[in-house]
Amino acid sequence: MHADLVKLLALQSKDTAVADVERRLQELDAEVGVLDRAIQRARDALDAARRAAADGVRRRDELEAKVESYRVLQDRRVQRLETVRNPKEASTLMAELELARSVMVKEENDWVRSAEAVTGLEARVSEEEARVAAADLEQAPERARLAERRRVLEEEREAAAREREASAEQIDKPLRTRYNRLRQSRAREVVVPLVGGHCSACHTSVPLNRRSQIRSGAIVDGCEGCGAILYPAETAGSS
Ligand SMILES: [Zn+2]
Image (cartoon, rainbow, N blue to C red):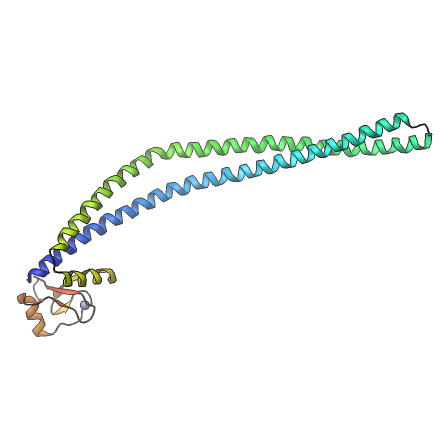
């Protein structure tokens, strides 16, 4: 086999190793993502509970202000009633007082209900806070395990990348560039065996004279169909 093909195959195996570590890192990211989404759901529920509680507090405070303003008006009516001498005016004022009192009773009831609702909504916030804290606690060992795995994998990736670069440096620049370009554009392997006179990647037939040159190690040649770099396979029927 051509010496460059030996080097290219070595480089390709190093690239496969790098890709394998990267695939495992992606799987790890996916596992972390599952944990993140679970926490996010708990935090979203907490945010919703906090918004509901804030709305409840606003409504309660509005009702409280309303009841207070009614009380001020009512106090004024009571004071006026004490100074009124005209019986007709007094009876009109009495009717007004009575009406205002029934309105106030209704508003006060609303206020009591809104205050009770706030108690319930605040309890809900505490529950959701506890849920977030419990989820954090529950995930902690798994997250620690994943972080340790990431640390190991990142070391592996660095080592694999260093080996890959060392391997690449053994290859002349033009051939290395050609390999790198092919690697970026191809989903499959760049250096593939010539099997039975065909490119094993796309099954395009390779002309006879080039087959023998590839086998003798005279040339480094690419498939006319898919551009893969061909190496002679040591398999039966490859003639
Ligand atoms: Zn091909």
